[in-house]
Length: 160
Image (cartoon, rainbow, N blue to C red; front, side, top):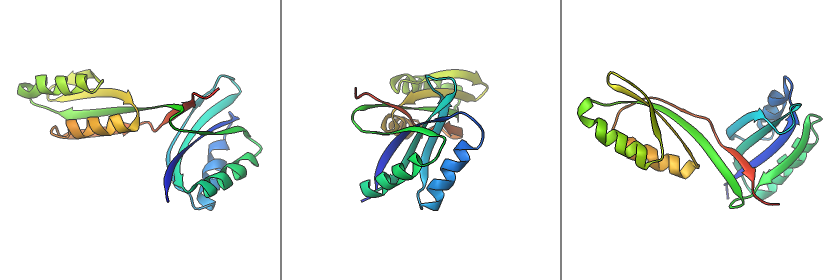
């Protein structure tokens, strides 16, 4: 069965590390559903959160292969429900002034914020777990979406 898995990697922060990791996933026949990379608690290292799909055995094999890369310092599977996961969604929607209140209510109820309003377009930002963002997108679907961008998951383990 294909389940969703999150891997947190601490890697050396220099060019080509991301490329090497992506190539390894590709060679092993894995699709990366989401990847985020950013600074970590150590300025010489970057934190990667990778979401992929597969069975537990293949994911373990992939983790072992990743550990062999010289630039991978630490790898940790992020185990749900012992994780904090967030994703950022930015979108621009069209709305006539007559529907502005309805749009604002949907955005507020979803935990989002209208960050810009220009003529008939509204720019919205919202963050949350994947399921809450999917619910929000279903609710907002009555308004034409002009542009949409998602960051992918960032996650940390809540286990000690």
